[in-house]
Image (cartoon, rainbow, N blue to C red; front, side):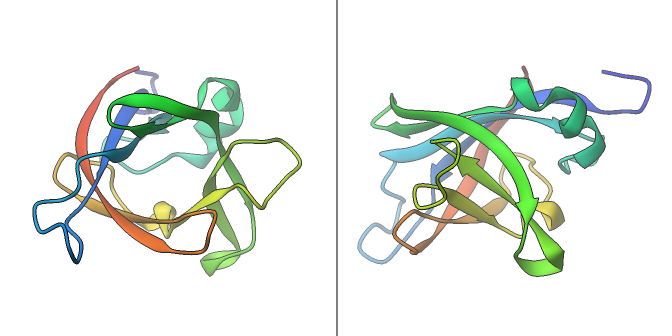
Length: 131
């Protein structure tokens, strides 16, 4: 952890309960690395310094099916948003975090992502560990 209280963390997201899957489907998820402050929020300044280390893996049944980067870009609520970018220069494959800047990434918390087809899905933070 740096003297600013920011640490690189690996965050595991598992798809949460949904209609037709009351216990959660447990087949879709993500693991990604991001700089988190002591309260569990993504730190933009630290991300700017460490963006090359901020990868994402999209998972199905525990297997990596897609690799990309955590990116911060203009647009969305508050003028900017976080997204998982799988192909540099293309936005049609990106998955955008819903208000990721306002959510703490702590075990048991819930966050939402809009997938590349425009569907908003909810995920539970199942683990946070040093990266």
